[in-house]
Length: 253
Ligand code: NAP
Image 1: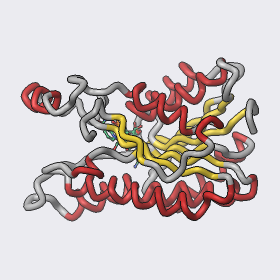
Image 2 (image 1 turned 135 degrees about the vertical axis):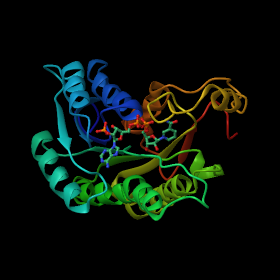
Image 3 (image 1 turned 60 degrees about the vertical axis):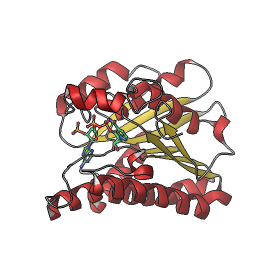
């Protein structure tokens, strides 16, 4: 499969880390190593979807946008079917869509818990299940799940989020074991704190406290994460599976 056009699907591709991943996978079409057409899924921001299609799409790289709720099993099946038709197949899946609904457990509502589990964890089941058959048939695939260091070490006020991301890690390792013999790798990337809309809610005091826990003394950029996803989705990463790669400035070393 080396040097052939790769077909990638990214959930949550409109903003933050997902947007950087769409750019990274598409940009690889200029460097002669990996050529990717990309379909991305988003939930609400139509202008963001238009913007990224205009910005990243070129004559060489096709970018397709699909509006769907990643937590819906039916939407995922229909979306993947459409995306595979447009792309002509699927080689790479990046499960990136995610939300936070932070609250201390005593105050956390059932809806805050369910929404985070459904969008962060169930979506990974939905999309992975939908791509697995075609990947098994072609005996090739790269699946990268965006977890979080919070799924490794926990975080007060994020019991729902930590549970969803720890779930993603368990799902990654189990799936990796199931499909390793079929030429499919499944890995997780665990970002630390990254500059996106998700962390824009932090006030100055919270940011400073956070930065004091990071040996590299800065928040990460979406590109810091996207580069690792780009590598894990390439042929160079063929012998890496079931791993969790932290991209966190040394926070959890
Ligand atoms: P973000 O800037 O808030 O972007 C979230 C993306 O997910 C958007 O493209 C959004 O689409 C999409 N999305 C949200 N709900 C969706 C749904 N129900 N169905 C489909 N798409 C949906 O978030 P981010 O910071 O880039 O985070 C991306 C991933 O990295 C998440 O899984 C997050 O948990 C993880 N992560 C982030 C950090 C961090 O510090 N930022 C750290 C560790 C892990 P719309 O634009 O249409 O809403």
